[in-house]
Length: 120
View 1: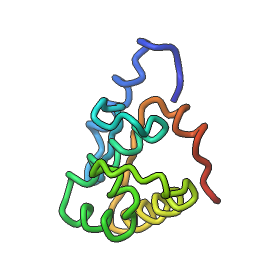
View 2 (view 1 turned 90 degrees about the vertical axis):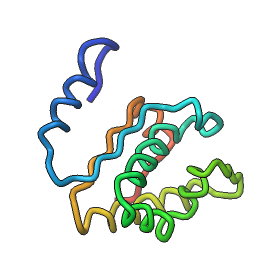
View 3 (view 1 turned 135 degrees about the vertical axis):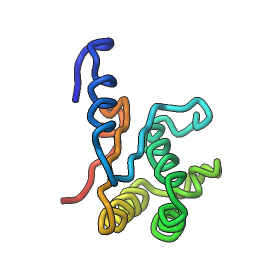
View 4 (view 1 turned 90 degrees about the horizontal axis):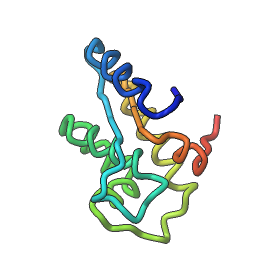
């Protein structure tokens, strides 16, 4: 979803999510706490909220996406290449979505998508 600032995009998403039952929802709103990983701020916040949603999701994140878990813990490792992070994120979302619906709502998605491309 795109549009000019202030036209109600967040309000529309909030209304949609209010009516969704039984889904793991990750929201990313660019926290100052995660500064230093600019391109991934919305994704990191989405993963942080998914991790907080259940112990099973937190365990899955640690097992399937250790690079992202490391980033969430504030250990920004320059040796983690983007390709590895993309594979981990894809694997995490695939596995998590096997047992429930997963909805990610990253704000400022144009920044995220401009830096990441996922294999089909």
